[in-house]
Amino acid sequence: MKKIFSQSLQKQALIAMFIGVLPILTLTLWYAQALSKNQQKTQDIYNKNQKLILEYNFVKADISALEKALQNNQLLQSETLQESIEQKWQNTKKRIQLLKINLPDSLFVAKWRQFAPDEINATSKAEEFQQLVKVLNQFEESFQQTLNKRLSDQEAHFVQLQTWFMFGLVILLPTLIVISIFLINRICQQLNQVESAVSEVGKGNFDKSVELSGSHELQQLGDRLNWLRLELKRIQQQKETFLRHVTHELKTPLASLNEGSSLLNSGLLGDVNPKQQRILIIMENSVAKLGSLIDDLLSYSAASHPDSLHHDAEMNLIQEEVSKHLSDKLGKTDVIVNWQNHDDLKVPYLPCKLVLTQLVSNAIDHAKSNVTISIKEQNGEVLLIVCDDGDGIDINEADSLFQPFVRGEKNKNNNGSGLGLAIVSECVKQLKGDVKWLSVESGASIQVAFPKRDPK
Image (cartoon, rainbow, N blue to C red; front, side, top):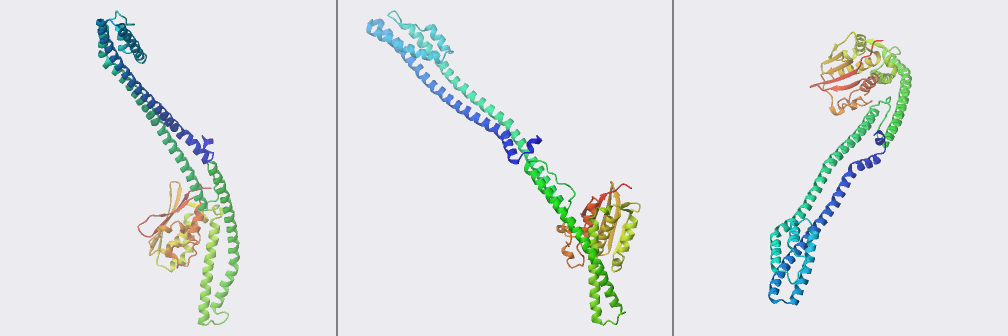
């Protein structure tokens, strides 16, 4: 079976047609041929019956004529008439012989043999033929029934043909349906394999090899997808390497710019007039924004690196560091952050810190008054849930928000880099978990779930 389904789709279709359609086609052709033969035989029986009826009527007429002729000749004693009677009898015997041949089992034939004379001569009497006339009249109905039975038997044979044909269809059609459903399911399974493989590659999961089983074409497609996966993985690694190098190289000149603008703004190098002060403020804000973007890029690069899983830490330590990191942002708002923490829980330090930093920072940006962070262990998984009471998200944008540099329509005017949720997504991949938006009446709620690791 596996060998069959590893062949090309064209060969599979031909095999399915051979298994499912050919028996039905054969049955139909057999029925058509048998029906044609049955109709021909029925027509032959009908024509033969008409001929026998005609012969039977001729025999009746001949016997009646012979009876009258014998009666007349008993008076006339004519040799010529006698010869004519004998000749007539010979012709009648031929007709009777035809009836005997075509009706061998008829009761009429038995009676005929009982009463009919072999020959007619001068001593033959009309009374003998009177008896024959009675036999013919008596068995006319039986003769007709015999002929009708022939037609009835042929009709019964036709009904039997129909029964066998319907019986064959009852067996073969469900078989064809089962084969069709089986093949459709096989094709759907193969398409689901393709969809799953393409989806994994589309999500950036380049570590899992693409293996498609089934038809020859599908296996070839699997090889091409696997090649594509490796190429994308190579490009991704090159991008990450480039990103790390560039961001580190930008840190040094950026620090110099920041120190220089701070020194100028302090007035140690001379007084700064209001116009210069405004320019310095713009420079400091731009440097801070660029620094934040570089930090996000470094975080994104770190999130996608496997080494980020090597160190575990208690959740309360991560909470303290995240709170400290976001203290300046919180100081500028009236938002209250509520932590519902599992203090004894140990988790991978860097990815969990990055996840909470990005999610809580986003929640503070969008919340009206409250942000709630819930951390718990459930069914062997660690759940990180961050909720805010803001305006929520557009459900149509939910999936795309996890892509780098993608921001929702509501955040187009914000100063964010668009990397926050992309960093979360990369961290979740390293944790072998999943991230999803939860359905809530108001605000937004996002959940990160990943398997709990055994303590080392």
